[in-house]
Image (cartoon, rainbow, N blue to C red):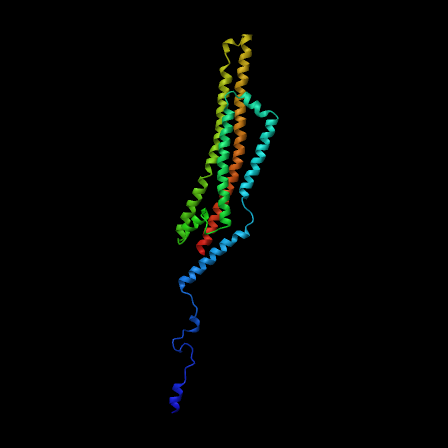
Length: 260
């Protein structure tokens, strides 16, 4: 009889009640939901980083300040009459051609600086919902191993470095155009000299005039090409420095993403 009563009592041992799950299993999320929650938390953290980055378009600001100074010096030269003197002395108009090539290179550099500055801002304030170079790189990097990430990083370096070389080539062409003007100027200067008429007093004045005109062309084209080359190379170094920062930021962000 005592045995019957003890078997009739309900069991208080954990996990033995009718259809009840163990306390440790209640509310546990499936592994897939846990991974989705971790990814959502990572994306939220990266999106919230935009508030922590108050500085934007610093690269573009440096570019604008440098060229404001350059054009201010150019305006001062114009006020002093130096530009008009160059144009009058250079009868081949090579100095004007060099200046227009410089303006083209400066325009290309401005476009590249704007693109790089935007890409830097998008990395610093990453938003997974926006279409950007950072989002594109993260999409290509996701789920890849270490070797694949290294290949993608090398490809990124080459692509971003290649897009700034055109500015350097344009800057180099300014020096070459100046050297061509030097050669043309010497040719003009020597073409007016006639050794057979050197003893003729009436012929000396035209020969000296031609000599001076040729030397003016040679010197002014060399000067214009060299000065504009320095100006454009300063802008190139600003762009190259911003590109290095962009590559570094993308690679660091990619490695952090790969470990997330």
